[in-house]
Image 1: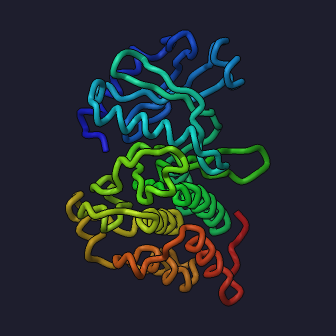
Image 2: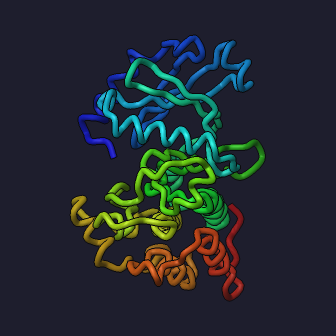
Image 3: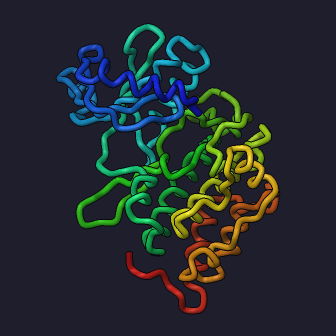
Length: 314
């Protein structure tokens, strides 16, 4: 993740990049957000780019200023662009173009969708109604399943990396964003994409949602993403993270050694059956943890249907 100085540098970039044309193909607009490896801007495709892919309104992710010229950062950034260009799924955001702002500073272009990241939604609403929560968790699980079937582990599932795309008259659809720290956990599957193995080890991730094996730098796989998704589900159902210490050290220690307070004790409207599903998703022992994100979502749905307790309408 970016350090505080890197985040400050990213914020200072906007006046210089806003309004700039990239290679005569895109005009940069306002800053939209920030990921692990770069800053995302609103963009407008110019004539040459529209002729190539037919998209006028786009989002442009640019390598952060503090990382310009860093070979490792460039490799991860280009790997993210490659993965997102090869995967086509309704719960992922696809990359449609790639280029260079200047030597040592790449950018890539994504389809633009209207909406907001889940953390912003939660900041406005607090805990979500069960029906909507289940819809968003299931969408995220479907996107993760697509990654996992191609040998890729996301490693940074959290509300700010779940984009809620708004559609008129329909519930929002979650799309996974930011593959900046994604790793290959199954090289055989990843080769089908043409992906290279940039490694699935390392303590990448966000403290409030990081799996125990990531904390200690062990190899990660699909179950690591299930753990993070279970933490997200806990958050959207209760309004709080399952593990939160006064410091980063205390938070990651809790992921390693503590058990979360049962969600039904935090939000009395939740059926007790939800607690067991969340606990399996956040199991410390990989071999006892729910292995598949779609299975986790299905078990959560079933928990709400237990004893006639069905999710209320969102």
